Image 1 (cartoon, rainbow, N blue to C red):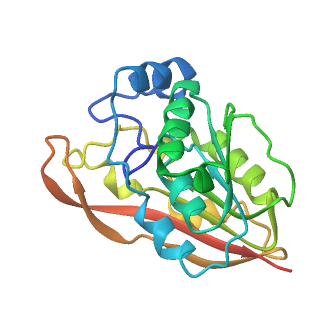
Image 2: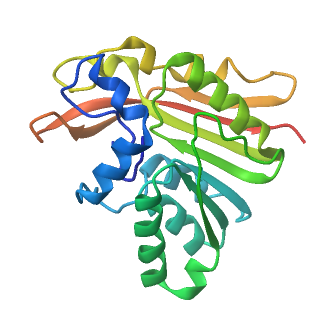
Length: 228
C-alpha cells in the first residue's frame, strides 16, 4: 500500500486472493522497503495534474511511500503531512527530502500511522491525497470517510486507484474484486450536501504489465471539493 510512481500502492502482481492479505500488514511493507524495492521517485501524475493549479496550503499525503508526492508538493510551497505505516519508508522519505533541500524538508512532517484505523484531524487540510491505496471494500470506504472529514471547507479530496477493469490477467492486478472500486463507487461515501464531485472518471494511461512491458491501464479517479 505504499507508493510513488503510479503503481506503487498496488498490492503486488501475480498473487492470489489469499496471498493478498499480506499487503495489509506493516511487516510486509517494512520488509519491502528494507529489500530496496524502490519505484521511480516521480510524483504521481494525477496529483501533479490536479494540484498544479491549486494555491499552496496544507496537504495530507496518505500512504506516502517513498515520499515523492509529499516532496513535490513541498517544493511548490505546500506544508505537507506524509503518513505511512512503514517507518522504513518514512526514514527513506526523510532522507530524500533532506537531500532536496532544507526549505523543502522543513515543510514536511512524516508520520507513522496504520491507515486502516488512523483518523486525521477534522477539517485540517486544503488537500488530501490518497494514491493507489487498496484495501478491502469496507475498510476502504471507512478510510475515505475519515480522509474526507480531514478536508477543510473549500479543500480538495483526490483519490486515485487501479480501476476494476485492470483485474484482467494481462495487467497483473490481484484477483479479488473487493480490492477495487470505481470513481463513482468511491464518491458514494461523500455527502452531496457537503461535497461537489468534480470528477469520478476512469482515464487510461500506459503502464507496465507483469513482465514489465508497456500496456494500457485504467485508473479510478475521484476528485471532489468540499463546500465552503
